[in-house]
Amino acid sequence: MELKAGILDAEAERIEKSLALLGVSHVARVTTAKVYALSFDGVDLDEAHRLTDRAVDQLLANPVVHRVTVSPVRA
Image 1 (cartoon, rainbow, N blue to C red):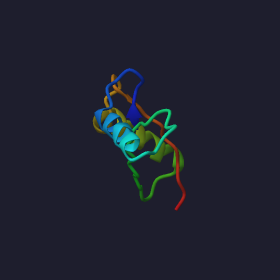
Image 2: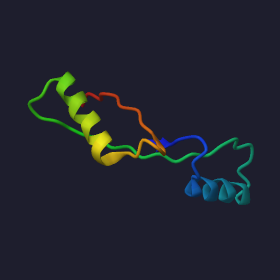
Image 3: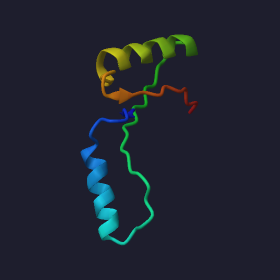
Image 4: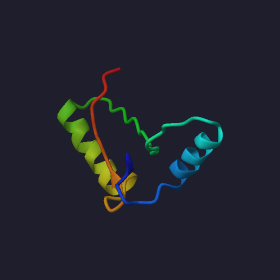
């Protein structure tokens, strides 16, 4: 989950400025993101996806400011 374009990412701006102060040059852009790993027991992939979408919609993300990518990861 990351912020949509046009939404202030203050942490990324601070990192970008700090990188310049450290002499790390040619950085075109810095963004920050969060990763949530949800594990489910006893459900198939379709149900896990449905439950994940519900968690994202109701708790984890604000659709006004966040861009969300959901993908299955096999352990």
